[in-house]
Image (tube, rainbow, N blue to C red):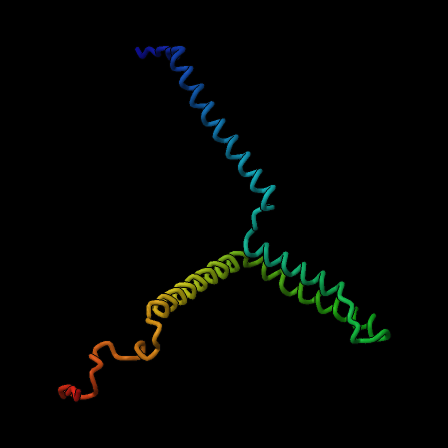
Length: 162
């Protein structure tokens, strides 16, 4: 004897609240999308992962080296040297790209570790700069032991001769 009741119809006030909540969420999402588009237009696309950026670097360096003309090699050696450079660049790309494809997370970790090392170095330099700038203008006073009262080298008493 189980009787199922039909779900009650939401009141107009409840419908208005739900519509207002949806409108707020929609407006917030539109504002966020517009801000992201503005930043993308201003700063360009966001950087990819470290592996993608390394691939871009390898491709750019390879293109620059392939287009490089060396005036030092002379007219006769130029085409042969150019061919040799292109071959070396292609071999390097062939060796690097599979490593990047197989281990993309490694490059992200290396980039993060580099950031941590930079932060540690910056912290050490800032601490040293604070110590340098906290000293006095007189270098002789900076080298003095702070425990030394500066009245001489021994425990004797100062005698004024005037």
